[in-house]
Each structure stands twice: as structure tokens, then as C-alpha cells.
Length: 353
Image 1: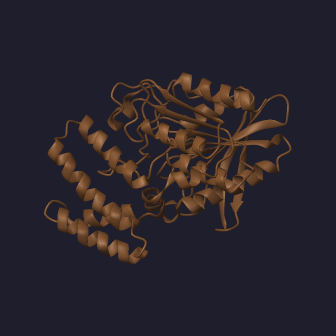
Image 2: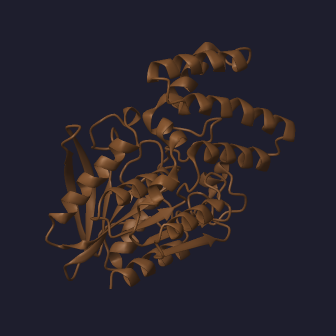
């Protein structure tokens, strides 16, 4: 998505280019290399940046996975470059980092809105294979850091391969996708002063659209037709046909459909590597109660290598915030809380000793 719609999607790609205080500037005290990785399944090339600490070798490494909506390797949005800030901090502290342009963004090929979680996971697995080929990297210490939708990709990849040594989930879903999105919609509207009646109606209306998406008996074209008819019936007097068609298009993107249909408990049950799960107490998009669901599901299935932390006053982007509302993101000068950077670094250092 290029904006926050009435669906309040997990991430945005709205862009402006003012430099923020935490943004590092060259020359960097570490090695920086432009890399290209081929996804042979889809015959596309993905572009990225690999940063390696200046001294030593056999480094632990993390692959950064971005939230929803096509984003560049810096996960740039609203003037912030959180993945650049995170990569810079970790690399200065002895941890190599690979960050990639999403499909159809920057120098990467493919079409983002034609791909789903399966394809994004394949991209991650090809990137992991690339990291295994690098002599500077410790092949047994390859980890993933996923933000929001990227946390789903991290979960799925870690459940698929033993090559993932650890994962860091930043505001990652821990409850079913349709429930998550309805909860997100409710808490944001309530924070904005919406009435109980309007919130209830909205839950019923959008909830029915999600039921259509989750219906396994409908193919893609049948879902689009049913969504069009349904949304026209409830919004036809308020929205022009073109806007309804745009809304149906958004709801039909494979990655969004996958999000709505996502059942994290099925995936978390298969993850045996160490997990660090973080949420901000002011996160209104993936509310911090998701932490409990992640921790409980992992431990229930025998994974005790779990650390879940709710960070006071941080929003969905892990900025120190007042309200947590999406309209606050751009006005905050901080890109990432220094405390979050420290927690991630210390945890990775500890488990990769």
C-alpha cells in the first residue's frame, strides 16, 4: 500500500526525503557491498546491500524483512530509513546485515502486488542460500529480523528450514490475520474518537469482506466478483465505482489475502530456533497482546528459547510516541528507539556467542 486506507494496513510506503537525526552518513566504519540475488523459482533478481564489520570474519548475520507494501532496502517511509539505521547499528557492533529492495522496488525485479507470503518467503530463502555462500559469514548463525508482515515471512521461513538460527519479530502477528486486522481497525478508530455504534458497524462490514477472502471454496475471480458486489451494496451510495474497484483490488492482492488467511499457530508450532519478539505498548496496528499469543504458542510446542518484551510508549514503527496513531509517525524525528536497537543487538550477541 502507498497509504493508510480505511483498512489500516500493517505498513505504509508514503515517502518524503528529509534526513532524520539517526540516519547514518558515509563514510561508514565497515564494509558495504551491493549484491544481487536470483530467485530462480520466479526468474527475478533482487538487489540489496550487505554490510560486514570492518575487522574479523565468521560473522553472525541477519536478513531484514520489511512490512507490507513494496519498500526499498532501507524500508524508507515518511522520511525515515529504519533498516538503514538498524543495519548500521548492528554492523558497527559486529553483526553482518543483508537488507533487500522488495520486489518491484529500487533495483529489484518482479511485481510486489502479484506476490504473496509464499513468494516473499522464497525470496528470503534464496537470500539465506546466498549468505551461506559467503566466506565471511558463519553459516550456523544466520538470523532473520522481520517487521510486521515481514515477521510473518520470518516465521514461515524459520518453520521451513533449519538454516535459520534465530528470528527477531518486530510487531509480528501472533493471532489470526482477519482478527488482527479487525482489532487494528477498532483500536485506531476508537483512539480517533469513533462512536461505539460506528465501530460496531465497521467491524461487521469489513469482517464480512474478510470472510469472503477466507472462503476456500471461491477462486480468485469469484472472490473479486463477490467482493465487488458486496462492497457496492454497502458503500455504493457513498463511494464512486472507481473507488470500490480500487478497494477490491487492494483486498485481492495476494499478500493481503495471505495476511487475512494467516494462522500463526500452525507456523509457530514448527519453529524451534530462539525467538525474540518485540512490541510497543503504543502499537495500534499490531497490538502488544500479540506478544502473549506468540510466546504461548512457541512454549506450548516445546520452544523455551523465547523472549517477549513489550516496550513502553513505542508505536508500530518502534518510535517513542504519545498516541501511537499512524498520523503521528511522520512528525516524530526519532527513527528507531535506541533501547530497541540495544535490546536486539544484545540478544543476538548473547545467543551467537
